[in-house]
Image (cartoon, rainbow over all chains, first blue to last red; front, side):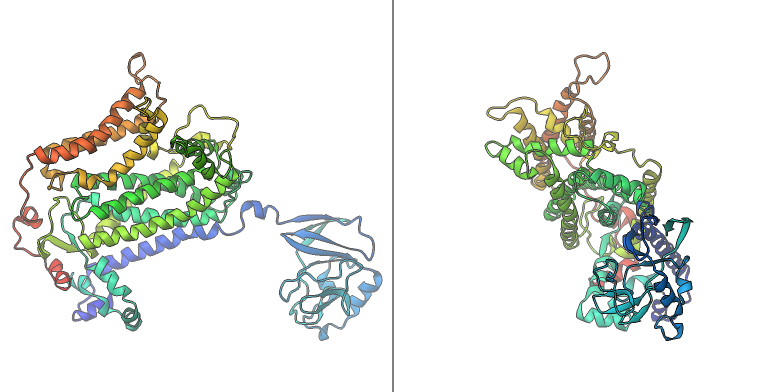
Length: 181
Length: 439
């Protein structure tokens, strides 16, 4: 508005300028508000959100065994760690780690390590769940895509991944039943 | 005032100038939507071009977002639509906007079409403009039909079955064509898949033809309620701000009506039967199309007799497609040189009789042919009204329009658009004069 007025010899702002501005503003704000339902329709819908928690029965898992469960379309590694694995994880000097975290920060009960099985580098699924798969140099997991090694606490030790395997929010509903999410 | 109507591409900033000298899009917009000289006497019937543009945008926009959630498969389509209604954030709003958007799109296009018929907007030099308009109407019908099949309800399925079966009336190759349309031996998954594909494609074809429609409009210039050509700057106004403002007001009223239906009566125009999932083994008691197809449906069913070698089935199909085709040749059927019905005292009557005829046909299309029109009056069935209505529909175009133009005594035309408004053409509005000098 103002530059037009300037062109025609610096006329003061007129009633029409006000009308233009308010009309444009109302139309703009109205359009922006009307866009929200469209944008929001692309967010997870109620049926997707309904699947956002997963309950896992831990009772069949023996010491040293791992299982993979699906939570929010992602694999979650559940490993029942041996006493030795727990000991190594707890005694690792935190200061040397790329993403310093103590083992205690990453578990609720030391026996159960529960992490999202997605490499924090570019999203591959690390190997190490099955007994036949390589577990990497720290006996945790090994990502075949770009060679990231994770330890028995799921912490990154070597390779390009920037962070430890992510620990999902979970709770023990009783001794052998957890709810993830 | 004048400060806002004069600024052209040259008033933009550095970036605008840089772009404009390479791709003169700002110059174009200024010329076609800024200073574009429009007759100064538009009434509100001239709002519907802008309203239709708005509806096309609404339909494409809501449709794209619906397509993100919809699954075109016979076993999943119905449930995916219900998921849109219940689970998707604002899915109900997207779907109700889209479904009622079709209704409002057709309301607007029919008003736009009757506006053209009343004011003779199809006459020289606007024949091609009119033809593009009828092409858009046909494409809209195809879009609406393919779209209505997608929710895969009972009426979707049986509507698709009935309409595709129309082609079986074509002699010799009819059945082969129907099989080809279906991609099988009944309306089934292949049919649903191709209808989804076409329903996604057609709106963009419509958009392209709308561009041609608007280009043709801007070559010939708009018609106006008097139906006479502008004689100079005193007869026109720059499109902006005069008609951008008038269109905005009309659009605001229109959106209010649209919102009222979307939010308070979203199923008013819908068919409850379509909330039942398609069942290939159970035909609904009565198959009725959406309201905007009812007059054509009535014409289809009104031909219930054989004529020479044409049986009733083929005759009905010919009549229905003919009722749309006849619109293409209206510019050559109407022999009157006077455009606006304001100066055609007899045509004015026939125009309104024709409007009533279309309403009557719509009414007939919504009822079973052999149902009684009035309870207790046995001799009048809907099919009888259908006969009369269909006959009149064609008589209006094929007899009234050519003959009336030759015998009607028209009223004298005003010498200019501004004469009846300003009482003479001398008072050229300053706002109008300046852009005209450039044009």
